[in-house]
Amino acid sequence: MSSPSPVQIREANAHLAALYRRVTDLEQRLEDAEKTVREQAESLIRKDEQLRATTQEITEAKDKEIFFLHEKLCQSDESIHKLNQTIKEKDSLIGQLQHRCQLLDNICKSRPFLDSMLAQMAEAERMGPVSDLGKPTTNSSLKDGESTCSPSCLSNHKDFSLSEDDSDDQELDGVVFGTTV
Image (tube, rainbow, N blue to C red; front, side, top):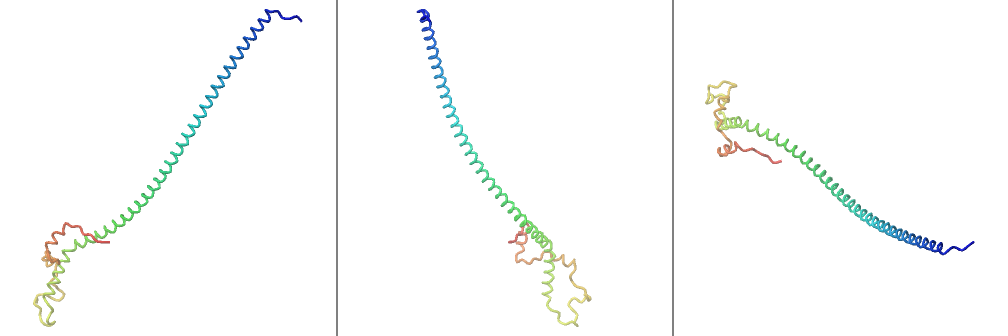
């Protein structure tokens, strides 16, 4: 084997130097790429942690709102139940009051007749007791079974009232009567 010529040695040295520069350049590029990848990985990890924290906050806020809305729904359901119960009670009370109102209406419609009947009874009391059965009464024109009570006689006493002040009756005509339960 012969030794290489100086030109070959220079070419080999130049080639080795170029190869060394290329390796150094590639190592630098690899180091830069690894640094970039590391930075991106760290950035992704930070973003992932931020997203997890944000997701956790959103989940907690959502859970709190769901709990609040559930409580509100339960309260609303309870209020609805109470209101429905109150409505049933009020409906029952209305039914009772309507019945009482009907009774009062019937009493008010019957009042003229009752006033007339009471006037007739008062007049009968004023007449006093009958002295003897055998003696003729003051109204001898009446036959057995007849009485002075007739619809025509009752109509004569429409203005009769049991109240002490007839003006009270006029004021009460427009008033709705109520009762306590």
